[in-house]
Length: 200
Ligand code: ATP
Ligand code: MG
Image (tube, rainbow, N blue to C red; front, top):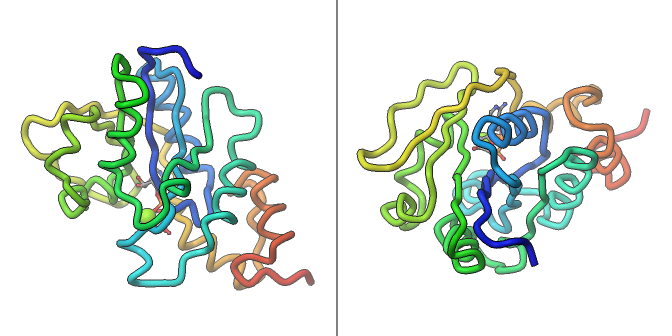
């Protein structure tokens, strides 16, 4: 088991697929806040998204996140929400991490778009007691300050206008993902023929 009293960053996401925007956020927050590690927590059932579109099976998204963090110090692919099953609620994830390391500190990392929707998350009122909020900007997305009383840090990261939605469209169109995702992620997409990938 990991040493107690750790400073742990938590970047939750659908990661459908993971891309360099996610990695830049995780790496730069880890550096800026001297975190021991940043967990990329793969949502099992991202209930706010599954209502709108088909989401790639969790096992495929987990395989891509594992490939994404390869060789990057301090980043961890977490299957905590997949192991728990069912709809993924960040409040349960943070509570589980707190129970596993009561002396530790948790930092919930969110991009501006996710921050704008924070109050729609399940049991959002309980989040502030479980983690410090860390806000990173995304190009073109304005974000209001979070609710009063929630400990907040803002971290500047290189801004990269990239979203998984664009990447899924690129694959479906036959365009390459080179340099937009780590090579290992691109390999998983091609090997498993995700997002309608066709070899030409
Ligand atoms: P989609 O287009 O499918 O919504 P996404 O690129 O927004 O995908 P998510 O898995 O929804 O990726 O995002 C997980 C977390 O990563 C969110 O907090 C989101 O704000 C953040 N994030 C995603 N892309 C970036 C980026 N380019 N820069 C900074 N943060 C990002
Ligand atoms: Mg998103």
